[in-house]
Image (cartoon, rainbow, N blue to C red; front, side, top):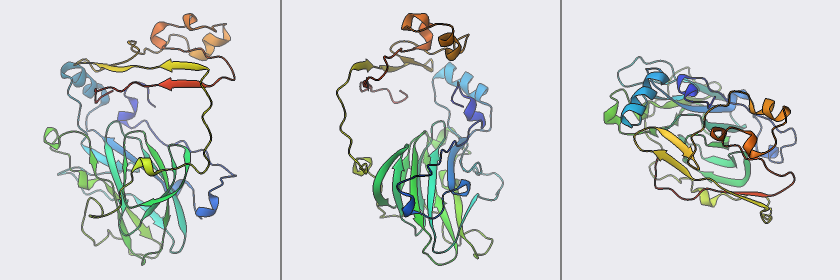
Length: 292
């Protein structure tokens, strides 16, 4: 849920729509719930407490932990078992990696295994192989991993940045990891050192991604500009100088009751009524505000 700060407390999860006619299905053998990789952040206090502090001083809270598939450790905490993704030697896996954190930026890699990107944020791409992928909050990538290494355990590394660690003594980004385990490997952690990923590996440059088919962009029939700003020190986000507030009546109910123009909705809903079968161009002017 992305209403207010609910998912900071753990109310979050993947919603995957599988395409039975996926044109890239020939690139992988396995794509099921076991190959979903969820990256998250975790705090040891409630979102309500965090929000009160943020609204009071404007300082962005720093997470205690990063998590992989809901499991993580923090500096000085218990050594809970890491999450495990099991693979069979010789098979190709479509890993659906999702950064569902509130703020953390993760850099993902898997020891000795290159990652071939075939989809970014729901859009298919020409296969593009890298060693590491930097993922901001909300980003999703599908990558193909070929299980062609010796049967063993390997680290999935997901170190993160999310503010200054000095502001949270529990934070240790190297603890954000999980295990890729080949079937038949010992039930144990990898015996290789913890790292942040390959030293001289190839990192994803998003501009290098290409769609399998280039579809020309039609001219816009409607142009909408959305100016994003943050009220300094107040933790209030505005779109076109309006801060969103949930409507008293659900939007769909209002439509069923006859609402069909912008003025029929409360201004704090920021509702745009669009004509059917038209091309809409939405522009986001650049901003110097990091939070925006």
